[in-house]
View 1 (cartoon, rainbow, N blue to C red):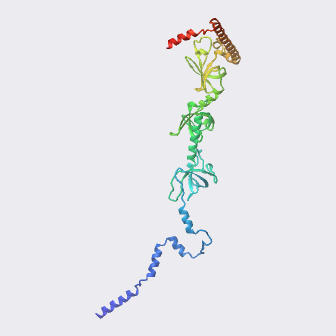
View 2 (view 1 turned 180 degrees about the vertical axis):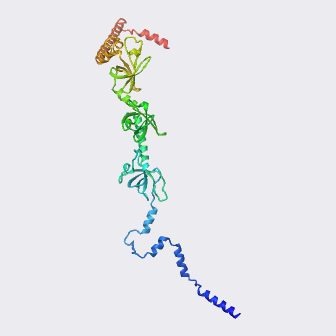
View 3 (view 1 turned 90 degrees about the vertical axis):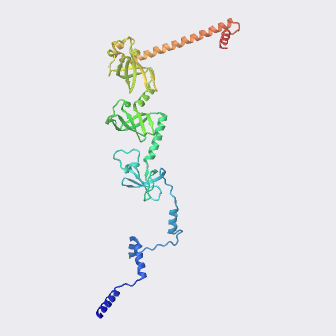
Length: 392
């Protein structure tokens, strides 16, 4: 029993020797270390040079500066147009300073309305040049905005196109691509479709790419983003402005019909009616003209609005029926015969004017005779009274 009691006392003394007394100061230090960030712990343990900053002599403190930054409001909203400067090219775009808390980002796809294949951001945007940008996003978690140049150029391009359509003038555009149906032209930065049927003198092949063509609008639809243009209409309008009745033109017979022949004149289609081919009657048109035949014709009428012209070869015949007997002779003497034809037409016009003048003068003399015979009375008074009675 005494041995058991002694053993228990020894064990109790050993445990007491390893027991740590509670220390409030030590517990506080452990709690502070647990709440400190990794950076704060590294900073506290750093034993290197310490830079002591002082706000003495300054008109504001760091607290004042922080309050001023927090109080500043930035009115940058989606779709706003702001001034900015590209300051650095970055992967997939460039960094733009627009005066916000964080720099904005301009993606390559938003840097230009039209980008040639293989274009890089360096080819599209110049650094340190102030320009307009459109905000196209909200701030991300870093406070950065996305901006665009393309969308500003897109609206400006449509304004230009609508103004051109209203003026209905001929303009020039470059062909940038071709497809099975026609060609794609660049109009004020917008892609416009040129149907193959509205090309003049050529087909929509690869050789067309890079050419600058005169065009006019066929369809402008901003809502559907649709532009359709015509080269033929522009060429016709330009040529029609230089054409007059009586002009001699060269043409190519394109097709024969029972009522005449269609002749292509510089991209325009003119009708050579069968009654205007020769003064003699034509029994078989194919014996006089064939498709692909070069001819000379005189313009006898034209419709500049619709681009239509009426042609004649009989006015170029030295003798009636020469188109049936020797068409080559008619075309060879076309200018000389046309000159004689114009002189004859002018003489006939003057004769008609003289005849009309004689008729008017004769009517004047007749009225004078009627006035003299009526002793001052109105010779048309009875006629006037009869008309008044009929109308009453």
